Image (cartoon, rainbow, N blue to C red; front, top):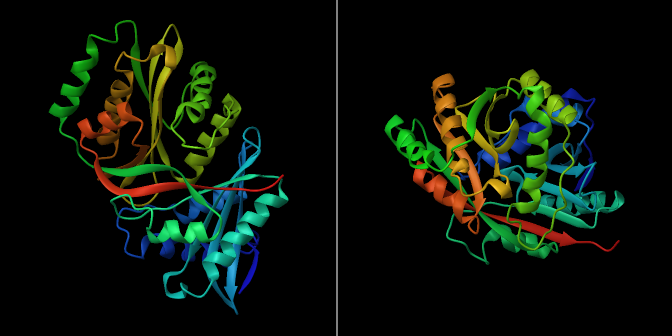
Length: 334
C-alpha cells in the first residue's frame, strides 16, 4: 500500500480521488449519508479561502487508487487542531488501506504542528461503544470525544406547522426583526454576523475538545459566498436583528446536484437567549427554502444531544433520527 499526496494539477487523479470518496460514503449501505459534489471538493481544495487549507492523500494498491483522505487545517484560529477523514472504496476494504491512510493523515497533522487531531464517523443507532467505526478509530489512538445525532427533515413541512411554531414565539421577541437572504448577506450585517458565528464554535457542545473563538471576517464570508456561487451551491440565511446587529442566525446550503439541503450553523447570542429566536430563524429559512427550491426533499442536520434547546426545536419541526455520529480525537505530543 502506497500513500501519496493528491496532485491537484492532475485532473484524472482528482476525479479518481473524488469517485473513491463518493463510493466510500454513498455506496456502502448507509442511506443517511451525504457527500459533496465533485465541483465542491475540487473548489474547496484548489481555491481555498483565507481561513482554511484542505489537503488530500491517496492510497494506492499498485496502480489502483483505493483510498481518499482529507485533512483540514484552520489558519487563523485553533491552529493546534486538524480534522482528518479517511475513505476507502468499499470493494477494497479489509486490506489495510484505511489504517495506512489514517496514520498518514495524522503524520501530516504532526508535520504542521497540530497536536489535537479530530475526526468523525457515522453508524446506525443506538449509541454503541463497540460499533465498528469506534473500534477502528480506537485501534489508531482515537477515542470518542463527543457524540452527535444525525437527523433528517423530510420536506415539505406543512405551512400550518411552521405558522404554529412561529406564532408560539411572537410574544417573546418584541424588538427583534427576522430577515432572510439568499446567496450571501448584506455588508452592513457582516461584522455582527461574524462576531456571532465566531462564538458558535466555543458555545456548541464539543465534549472533551475545547475550541477557541473562530476568526471569520467579513472578507472571508464574502470569499465563501463567491465560491458557493461559483460551484452552484445555493445558500439560505435567516437572521434575527436588534439595533442593527445580528443576534441570531441560521444557514442552509443546497448542493449543486441532488435534492438535499444541509443545515449549517444555528446560533443565538448568549445575551439574547430566551426570546425563541432560534425557532424564529429556522422557520423563516425553511419557508424561503421551500418557496425557492420546491425540488428539495430533505434537510440534514446533526446536534449533540446535550444541546437540548436546539434538539427540541428540530424535533418540533419534524426532524427524525437517522444515525449516531461520534466525534473522535487523538492527541499528539508537541
